[in-house]
Length: 415
Image 1 (tube, one colour):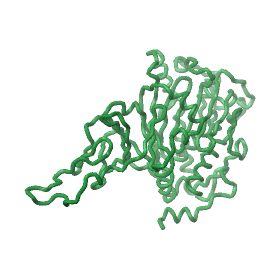
Image 2 (cartoon, one colour):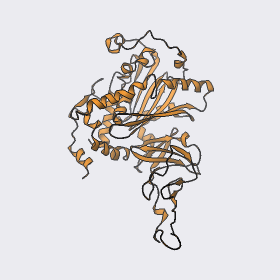
Image 3 (cartoon, rainbow, N blue to C red):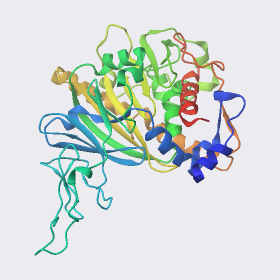
Image 4 (cartoon, one colour):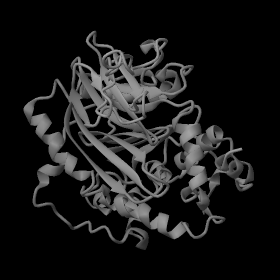
């Protein structure tokens, strides 16, 4: 029995259920290794890239599924593939760049060459030299290839899974999640920019953070000050049927100021502040549902964000038990005018590593990591909005989506 499995057998979730999460989950290396197996290499759909990032035949894009290196490609017939980025010979990385356009995939170590679907094409000195050496006579290139993942596209996104029996992505998401992704991404997309950052915390702390509407107008006082996203706006939380995924939404135009915003709990917001560049918050009504801010998470590590008119995908990858790499991809639509594209670019300054809003998230989760690592037997307390795991269509003063994450996590980890 592996050390990770022994840890699993010894681990006991608190009797209170998903309203508690043991701090051990954020710092135990054996649990972290078990997550690689059961979650990322298990029965989930993992976001790999956008179709627009491998738009042309010969394009490839490297990423990771958990910590496993993966490459997504588009072959000469336009078909998309995904494989473990690991040579079938000695295990070296095959694709070394983030992205490229190539005729085939070639390992620099011993020049084993693969087609764009991962099938082995050629082996250097397969027949030896001058009749000496080379591969055995029964060596068959068809028996050696890059390990494939099951691949499916949905609304311009490329997903991959190690479970080749996975059903369609749309079934994995469920009807509510699928429909909202179609709202935001269901038309031809263009990439406006990308960047990434390292955050020094366990990946699950960022998964929690994205689902935590409770903190949004307490930690992010820019939101509160300039009335971009506040809990007293019309809004709510929608959970998928299986509780794994969620949508948090708000309508900026529908706000009835609550007395609680004058209390000491949100005293850091300075409502008399003004922007020297007010164009930052200029926007137009893009959808007829009135929603001006939304955060949608897809288990395990994907987020689709829409704030005013800024559309972005956040993908966060574990880089060790206490380190996470967060990738931001800012998007527009191919139909956008130049003015609309520029407004989206301007609004992108709200989020990202140095964003006026989300820069706080880059450090707050590290504070949790540092505060919890020496107390593995203590648990977090998550009873804001009650103890149930359900949609809350009229309130975001709740931790129901965080509880939903742990509901899904416990299921797939068998905790």
